[in-house]
Amino acid sequence: MRVLPPSVDAVVDRASWAPPPIFELIARTGAVSRAQLELTFNLGVGMIAVVPPERVDDALALAAARGVPAWVAGALRPGSGAVGLISDYSGVAASWR
Image 1: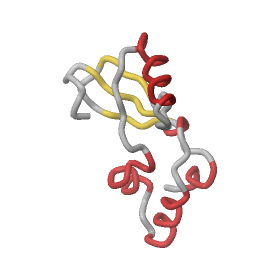
Image 2: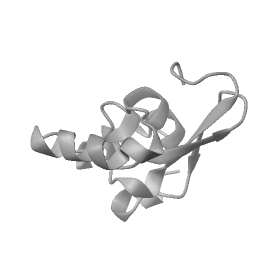
Image 3: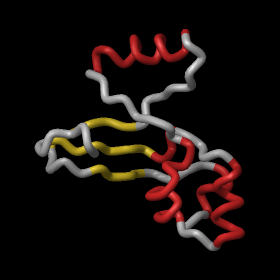
């Protein structure tokens, strides 16, 4: 959210990654909602880099060359500077509410 100009929204697709199992443990044992897990922990996404569409392959290749897991987590669109989450996680995380 902090890197977006006021005229751009980010749409993050939950289906693009699977949260690590530790978050299922936290959700279950602490009765923590998915919304709170997302807000507090980012559910395994350490950092998001915003790159132009034509440089995505270069960014992914650079991350892979350095042993850093990377994937396309979403897209940008005209908007009001908001971040939205779409889709659902796979596996156990799909049951979190």
